[in-house]
Length: 134
Image (cartoon, rainbow, N blue to C red):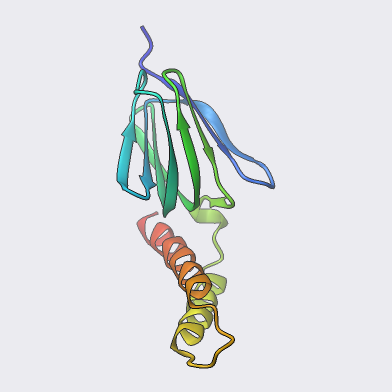
């Protein structure tokens, strides 16, 4: 009996990933969730973080910009605004995004949307973290 399940990661621009995997770990808004074949069915919101994928005993990671995960016994689907492999991440662009977001958060004028700036900062820092782990 195969101990794999189908993992599909979809963004508005593309089908980022689709394959049979041994395990996936996602960051939900409640904490990390490890998923194996025959996992209890659930739907959960995702936080900004890494998606860790184990296939044939080898782990890979991708940056995920939040979204939702749907888990069924034989298939897990992740729907996210953005997913990137480490080699797809532009490090200099991510560093500039960190600087811009930090400047916006520090800004005290009334037009700054601090929550939006914090989310941009979290996404950029997550990208940099994924690149450093690669």
